[in-house]
Length: 258
Image 1 (cartoon, rainbow, N blue to C red):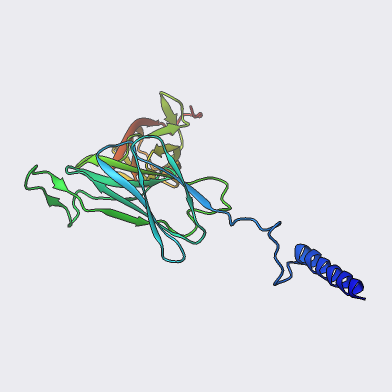
Image 2: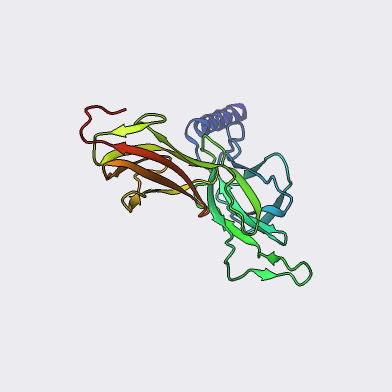
């Protein structure tokens, strides 16, 4: 009789265990199938020794940990689910800090900032600590790509952009002639800190305006007959401006475009 009772108890436990594996019945351990919670990741680096970059992580319990990023190759960090992530930078005297995420400048210090002081010893401007909280969703355990964060430090008065340019396309590569007015001029623009806007000016008419688009831009530009000197301006995310000029000749009587 005792054997039958024990057998029934064992069978009942096995049934509960099977149900817990299939359906997740509460109160029954399921260590065999339990997986650790996935963690998000981010990569961060700085190529300059004229400042410091730290990643400050606050988890759901309020525990704070800080990771210092050394100059050199990017360092990949694991971020607990639901944690708050802050980027903390501090430039040395005479330099200012900018934070770039996936090629876009998201926060930077201005030469005209009210909190800028002058060092009594070096007579150079001293910028305060720059703190930026990552927006929700920037780091995610389900993301297909790991966000890349760069802290860039440049001398005061200098732009953060290292590479930027704007080019034209269409209407010929060297000699641009048209019989259309206005004409749709287009091209591409790029900067390693992101493009804020693209504008144009026809110096032959004095007209100007904003182009449509950024990395790929287009503008309908009114002409006067003859040569029209066109200047296209790229404004990078740090406010720095880069220009490219071209001349488009407008002859209404011709019957072709080149």
